Length: 121
Length: 109
Image (cartoon, rainbow over all chains, first blue to last red; front, side, top):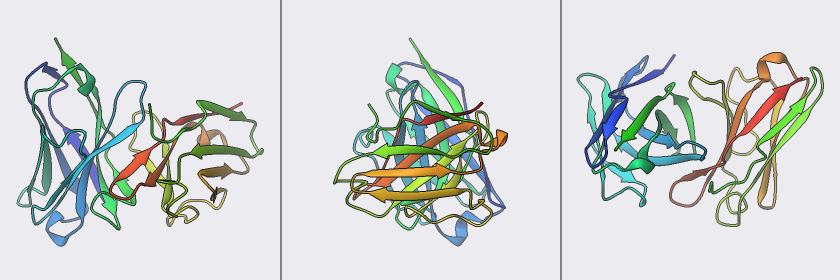
């Protein structure tokens, strides 16, 4: 069974960098598929942030493209999110997930439980 | 502020059926047969229950069914059970990346 688990600081200061890691178990990232980050801000719906392939190929949501970097570490079976110059609106629960059928995901078949990141002033 | 519109909450008694709607536009729900639904119990990982409008992943009970008409997709849960109480999110492919609804809280009375 594929399992995903997010980890990282729960509090980030405004203008600094948010960094999260998703650890994957039950499946080797090296075997293929894209891997994605999705977030849910308080009171808002879900928003796809971006996806990365084990080869390093990336796709980003235009809304955050200028500030986001995804990376993958196949040796640790992990992939990571970096969001620069965070603002209060970046406060959200961040999920990692596996998109299917397209890089950005026609749907997502496995998710992590999510981690809350609060941006403080 | 979500791309897709869902009712904030729906409710039903055990054994009854409920339907959750998900309204988008011709650029997402109406334009593609790629609507998916997720069940989310707070604190747990969201779970895929419907993909490609009406397909169920292995292990999802046939009490869960999906459909679409025009720009509106629907999730129907029949034979409601206590454990169905959760938040439900719809999503649709929108040509480049997916968009999501704001979520619907299902209350089992």
